[in-house]
Image 1 (cartoon, one colour):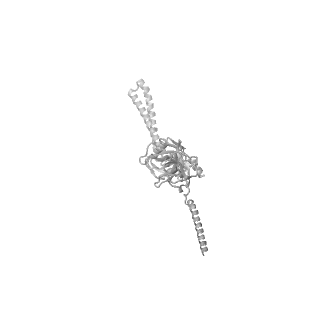
Image 2 (spheres, helix red, strand yellow):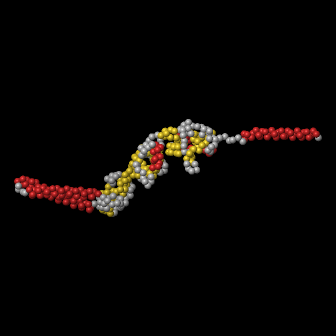
Image 3 (cartoon, rainbow, N blue to C red):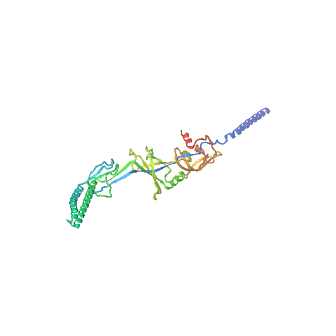
Length: 392
């Protein structure tokens, strides 16, 4: 009996020993199981100033290079319309024919008056020549010679007036043929055959627009223009590149590049904007007046600027831009920044970054401001080149 109790006691001691060993192993394993997770990995790009050609994208509208409103210069009934609406016309091309009968009669009457004046001039001339000889021999008095000379000059003036009347009648007769003042595309006709028109009327008969080349007028607010002048050191657009790139309404690039003409010298009071005009070739007539376009204008000179990949720039709840920066202690900082123009796949940072800052480019989902991170790679290239390498 005593031996059985000893045997049971020995088994109990062995069980306790095994249990203690198991607990010790669990305690040894506990520190590993409860260790902190490794810091999340991010990739960064080093902020580096480099020569950058600044650009801006502005909205604008196309307008005709020349616009001619066709109006009659004499009155009458429209007999014919001699063009196709919406078609091309050339300068001097006949567009409308006004009834010329009245003006033909006026011209014939003026020519008859001219003939009478010329006949009177011939008679006065012969008389004056005869009196010039007779007055020397005292066959006629000096007064008669003076009267004959005055009659000659009066007859000459009558001929001149008659010729002017004939010229006026011819001009009015010519005006019965309403011709195109410029070459271009003509719109719809506002009158038909049989319509009565008057000279110098306010209503137009048709409108002709020259569409090649074409003007593109873009507007820039005076506030943004001031910012651009401060950023580029430019005045009145003098530092803008003369070449202008255009984007169509569907965001596709236009095949032809325009040329910057001028930047207006006054601010429109109602809109607070300044007009910048460019001339654009339009050989295919693809652009039409009034069409909405976007123009990309670039600076003619490069300036040092920090550009980071566009994916690095985020927005806070208030919509203001910010970037995540890794400091020397490998901690993440949320850095408010001011952004400028987009340059390719990068965006220019005008304020908030300095050379050497490590800007996070990926891994945003696993990081937060103040947290520790592990930088995977630190590209030594410029921001734009690094971003291009990442997207390849």
